[in-house]
Structures are given as structure tokens and as C-alpha cells.
Length: 171
Image (cartoon, rainbow, N blue to C red):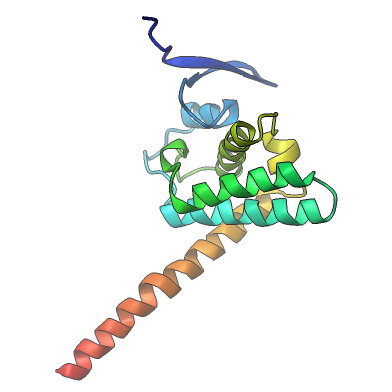
């Protein structure tokens, strides 16, 4: 019985890089992991969810505008829904401390979604040309921070404050 290799070779504009065999991310994410091992902390779950939701919305609009073909856009949206649900969190290894524009996390998201969409569609989905179409990490990353923060306020902070207020009223 042949053992599965531990790594696969990915190629990008900077050359070859070894990526864990089962990783859904690709070369640029691996380079970010290798080049910027700052804290060992990854993005929060809510931030990954926010990035995925932005990518899904962009794919939907890009299909409507004719930038992406509908089946490809739908494959990206479906992949983004899985990521938003938390099914692929282990494929987001980029350190939370990175460039201010969040380029590494944006590309990590693009690569994971492209891989999942490619698997679903059965034809290549490109991280930049398709998943990142009509977007800039200078817009996506700050927007994802706002979405994640708003979600935390609505789903975590407000209920906690309501619980605290109710507890204080009982005393």
C-alpha cells in the first residue's frame, strides 16, 4: 500500500513551494505561514466567517454583472457558505498579525474557496481571477473586521449586557 505524501508542490510567480498535502490553501498562504510566524495566533472564527460572507456576496454580484459565469459563482458561494459555517477553519493558518491590508488572510480565503469551488465544479477556479474578482484586500479586510466586530456586538456583547442588567435588576 502506497503512503500518501505529506506535501505537494505548488507553483506561483515566486517559484515552487511545499504545501501540506491535504491543505485547501495554496502557495501564497504557505509563503505567509513561513515568512510571518509572528504570534502563532490565527484569525478569530468570526473573522473567517466575515471574510467568507464577503467573498460569497462578491461572487453573487459578479455573476449578476457578468464578471463570473453563474455555475462558477455558485460554486464559490457554496464554498463560502461552508467556510462561514466553520467547516474548514483548520485551513486558515495565517498569523493574525500581518500586513495592515490583510493581504495574506485575503489570499488564504481566496485559495481555500478556489480549491473547494474547483472540487465542487470539476473545473479550475482561480483564487485571484475568480474568487477575488472586483475586490481589493484594502477593502475586503477592513470590511471583514467591521462585520466580525458588529457580529460580536450583536451576538455576544448585547446578550451579555442584557444578562448582566437582568441579574442586577433581580438584586
